[in-house]
Image 1 (cartoon, rainbow, N blue to C red):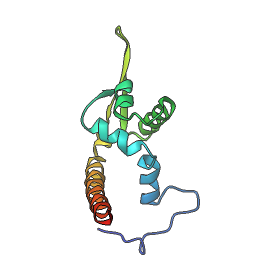
Image 2: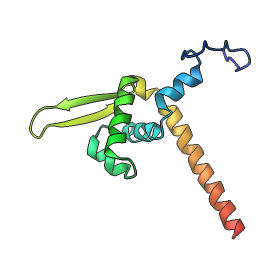
Image 3: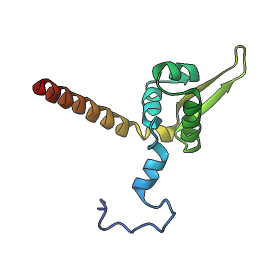
Image 4: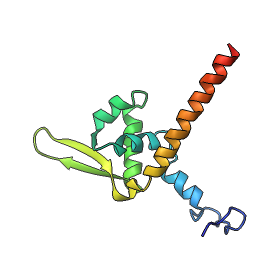
Length: 123
């Protein structure tokens, strides 16, 4: 059953009963979808994610991963054998975001192609 915004029950002020609000809270941060994108291709260590996202600070990456873990989208595994390290992977719930990640990536490619075509035409 599809519920349109017009027929959806409005949420109580301050609640997260709105599906869009809940989704944006879980994955709407600037870096959240990018982290999920890189984790979609496999397990990654913290510093590997830093290399894949050079514009993110250490602090912001740690906060983003912590948030995604709290939302149940990312699983954090601590390996204590020498050298000790931490690995991040998509949880089963995080894998449910995969179609959204791919849709956003596809839209981004189309948007960039359109933007480049427009810029070339304007030159």
